[in-house]
Length: 80
Image (cartoon, rainbow, N blue to C red):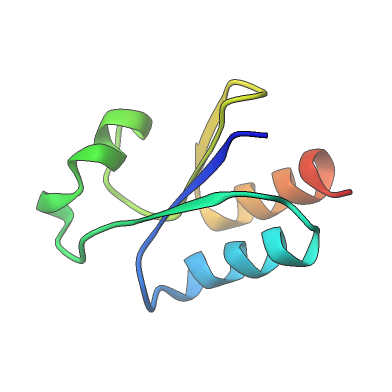
């Protein structure tokens, strides 16, 4: 499974997503991003915006932002 989570250290919304992925046994990689929005070119490239968290699920061809949307996706699609 190829899942990447773009995250910012100390971001409470990102932490919720990390917790949900861990609790549901989802294997993923974390790409830590810079605090300055202007330095988040990789996030912009993959998602079209610079906010985090952003989840990329290559297996399902899904890229999404907004923690609530990601949490729903984890529960409905990725949970084991």
